[in-house]
Image (cartoon, rainbow, N blue to C red):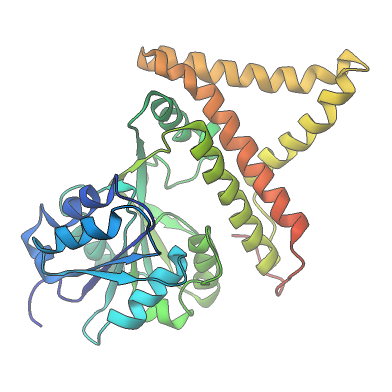
Length: 335
């Protein structure tokens, strides 16, 4: 196994990704001949669209592409299963990729190079939001700002540094096994939950801001709402499992939603209570005008509504999960 990158295992979890999966795989393999020696596993959670047929078609062009059926459906279980079934003794590096994304040339090679050079347990990369509808355009523009992501380092960041969490890209397989892999019961936020255990065990995470990938925003308000509701629920599960305190920026959307729910009804009795809803509404209007003017496109006007969906959807999911769960784990420090 002397071929370059033969020690790399690439895993792409999928579920109904017929719009994006072929573009994703070809972006990973088509621009780098050395990637022919890396194994790429598409772990599908029971797609009902043409995802599996498309993957099988692509596999005729790339004999290192394998379709793996994931009966547990969740992406956390998909990665675990791929490691269990396909990680051989010579595989040292796991590169996890998102079917909803497009990757630049040499992405995998750069991630693995960073793992080797920094001698860390994980490497995270920066996500740059892109779009395929007018709504998604406005959402993409606002999500990479502090208003949209709260300053998350892997959202449009430009500084490479050690972090406690980031968008999962590369992992050493020995570390992945050491900490027990992903929690297969997590539908989302499994990456942050994994990173918490990794850091607690002594693993280091490097954010390589010079390695960037393009992530497609959800194309409609309904799809974005579902996504961020799930994100909020996932964060709450991590908080409850490890009994950690969320960072202030993560609690601001929750506080905002609670205040809106309290002050809007009270505002019917006394207009003074409408100060908060008016202030938040003004922020959303500002976001729309700001993005519209900055990019000189009418699609920027969707930025305000998208920002409200991101904030309120995430907060509603967090509150729903926090009120609904009773399991608790050992006390731990914050992520």
